Image (cartoon, rainbow, N blue to C red; front, side, top):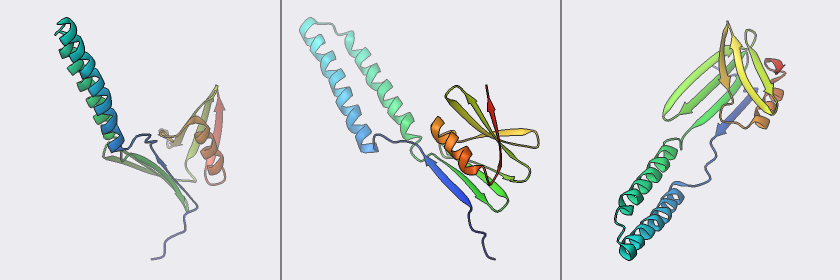
Length: 156
């Protein structure tokens, strides 16, 4: 069986400004600073109640970095092949896939000031697309899909 060539495909990845080792280093540096300040205050002034709060602060930072690490593999893929519009959204190890016939769906492009929202509407249902993109990139995506899918622009 011969595959149809892809007419359009885009994969959106989350911006990772820190690698996993960078996050560990940042946690060690911030946690070490917090702990050393807490220990200094305890030793200089005998204010030992500061230490549990320093530990709590380090734990909250650790939980935050752990939450961020849970999104490391997230991606969004939008593909138009033949008469099929396919959307894949992979968030926190869960994959959601939807596909539509391009003849029966409409890409809704809503603009509110500088905010841009994209959604695919078909058979009375709507699904958001481009969730991991910035507003300018969503607008560019709508323009790129214009000839492949019916696009309806709405301004509020």
